[in-house]
Image 1 (cartoon, rainbow, N blue to C red):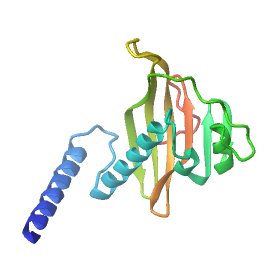
Image 2 (image 1 turned 45 degrees about the vertical axis):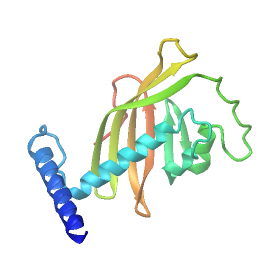
Image 3 (image 1 turned 90 degrees about the horizontal axis):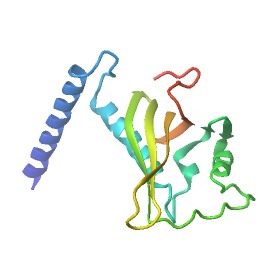
Length: 181
């Protein structure tokens, strides 16, 4: 059994090494240098983003504020929501806030995340991505695109876990003021 575990570990390490080499050599001029640690960090951030977006439309969604650092900021267009209570307010769940009515029943609601560009800088990181919301009102009806936009986010490690530090949602092609990968 120990031989199988060692062989698996060597195979995994070899695959990671090949992946790192491929990503370092085979990418464009502005590509980030990749190590096993940055690959793990990028995967953890991508998992955080995926779990966050999978939360939308769920009946028993996780608390959106749990995805953020305590001093984080959520920017939706021109509206800014700061800290845990502010972020909960953005989702209609702040203490003392009248809860929002549930959305109308739908056959399917999906938020897809595409083109994530994640750059790790030690214990901080940035990400830009495109999100698209799809809905099917009743079974058999065609899929409708409700909205599409871009997310520009910064992340920070909190107690060993990646959390949003800032998350800005915008339309169009203009980068946010002061944006740096």
